[in-house]
Each structure stands twice: as structure tokens, then as C-alpha cells.
Image (cartoon, rainbow, N blue to C red; front, side):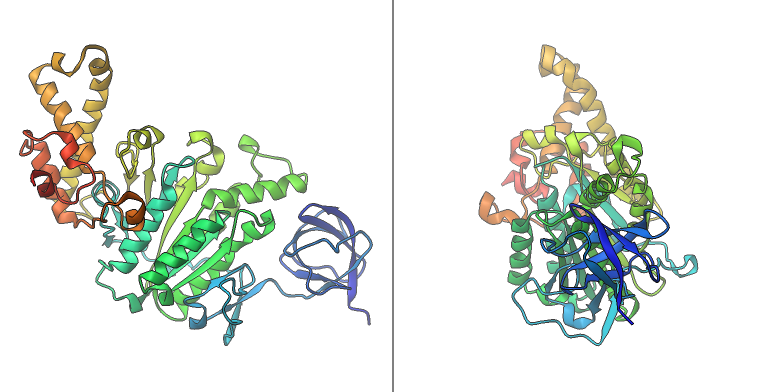
Length: 463
């Protein structure tokens, strides 16, 4: 009996339409060419009783209409196990780091169900990052989901890399590096940034406890679309089989929505809001619901999300927001003022900024600081028109302290020491709370705000 059960009837970029005369495939089955088994496609959706759209997963110059295809009857599977730690992989689990072929005992399909509701735990422990503005205003929950939102070139990847450095290499959680593993999903981002991350992790001695999966910007949309599922599968193996706590980093989740949109256009699907694919919500749900912490082990996910045209109301961005515990918004205006990280502390939020998760001192201090910055923001137009000296005494004091606060929340990063020439700073949350209270109470009123730029603790401003 011939293994050939279908033939190609149309090719549309990275989408191939295949007709079957024999047994029909199921969604996610991998097909290979009759005359070239190295060319792989994945069944995505049906287009009729006997025809299916398939995603091209490999180089496709040898594809043409009329060529026969063979159904492997299996989805994409990847090697999983401790052997993938310290390695850089592609969608299929093949090495991209010039290392040897990865040999593992287990292989898992990249499509898996999310944990049952009874297995999911509610995160309660705050995870310190050492970054003053994040720890005070947007606390990160161990086992939660954090999103870093920003337009092009405002420092999302730098901030994400610094968080990776501080959480893994500074290890402030009380867990040893050996108790926690890291998985990085590079979804449609620059190859250069991935190379720099690998070098940074290697220099810090933590690459042996991390696995990186890349579907970079130059890949076809099908590979970018599925690379996140490969990283998720590896994270789930560490959580469920190796019983490790997992730090999951993704750069950039918007590219996942964008890749799905590119594929939907090739398949002539009727678009939904903002011209995105109608399946956008379900795609984001299937991605984020797998990033769940169970009663035994936690997955903490930190995601960079690009905001197209600086429009946070874009539907691709809005589809991600419901799944996050903390949203950190990066502002282009703040970036242009030279304040880094360029976090908008008024627009950013976290469900962990509540008395159930942080101390009462922390909670009150954060609200007081936000209130002061909001009031100062309302005074800025007056100041721009008539000058700061024309404000009444109370408003002048509030405006000055707000400027000091904004300067204090700038910070030097370890990951860009060579570029900036400033040594990185890791600040404990207790010090951040005390310094913020002191600034609000006027302890540093005699100093100008420039003394607080890119320092660690506030006492450094007096030197």
C-alpha cells in the first residue's frame, strides 16, 4: 500500500493547500514530501471536505503543485529532559548553538493541555527584582505573569534582560540556581539580541541552568508562530517531571499575534477587530493558560510586548492584557527625557500591590508616591506656562519632591555597564520603601534632583 495519501494543490507563501483522497489527517499532523522527507508541513485547518491548509515548517523551494505528501500521523515533537539545559534550540529541538545533537530519553508533542483547575495554585509570594520602580509600584509574584509593554526602542529588551540577570544571577529569592531553571522564548525578535543574551548568561555562569528557544525575526511566520509552543513544552517538562520552579521569559509576545495574523491573511480568513485574525483570543488563551503554576511547582512568566505605533489600544496588545498579574508600561516621553528605565509608574499596575501580598508600609508608600506624581503631573502645564516659582509654597514643595522621586527611580543596569560606563545597582525593597518615604517627608529637600539620577540607594545622593 502506498504511503502517499495526498497531493499539493496550491502554494501561498508559507501556507500550502493539500488535497487528500485516502485517510484524512487530523489538525497538527506533520506531513512530509514524497520525494523529500526533509520538507515538513503541519496541518492547520480544513478548507473543504478533502482539502487542508498546512503551515510550511522548513525551506520550501522544492514544493510544487501535484507533488505527493505522506502523513506521519504525529504532531511536531521535541526532545525534553535535563539535556536541553545550557542549549539553544529551534522549533524542532535541533541545536542552534553549534553544539552536538541533543539526545534525550523523552520526546513530547509541542501541543499540550493546560493544567486542570484543581491543580492550579494562586501565587502569593513576591519575587524581588532589585529594580526600584518595579519592586515598589509593580511587584512581581512568584508564579505570576508580568508584561513589559512599550513601543519600538524604549528599552523593553534591556529591561527584560536586566530582570533575567537580577532574578537568576543575583538569586534574591532564596532559591538556589539549581532549584530553579529558566526557559527563554525568542519569538520574532532580533538574532543579535539573542546572541547577546546567550553571551550574558554564559558569562554569568547560569547558562547550564537555562534553555533558549529561538524563532527569530527573519524566520517565516509559521516558525515564529510555533516557537512559543516549543518553549512552553520544555517549561512544562521542568515543572511537571523534574519538579523545578521555572522562570519563563518571552520576547516578544506581540510577534506571536503578528505571525498568526500573517498566516491568516495567506489563508484568506475573515479578519476580526483591527484586522487581526478571528482566532487571536483563542491563540493567546492557549499560550497563557499553559503558563500556570501548579500546587507543587511554579512557572513565573515575564513577557515583553511591543506596542505598535505606541497605541496600547491595539487589539493585538489588548488580547494579552487579561492574562497578566502585573503590567509595566514603558513611555516614549520618559525615555526621551533620559530617564531609564522609562517606566510610567502612573499607568503601570500590579495585582500584587495589595496588603495581602506586600507590607502595609510598602502599600501606603507606593500609593503616596503615585499620588504625589499624579498631582505634579497636573501642575506641569502651569509650570510650563508661568514657571515653578509662581506656584504656591505647598505646590512648589510637592513639585520638587516629585522631580526627586522621578530621578530616584532611574537606575543603572548590570547588563549595559559597558555601554553606559555606570556600574549596575541592585536595591532591596526595604531600602526603596525607606528612601521613598524620606523623599516624600522632605529629608532630601536641600538636594537637586540631578543628584538622584542613576543611583542605588538615596544615601548615595549625599556623597
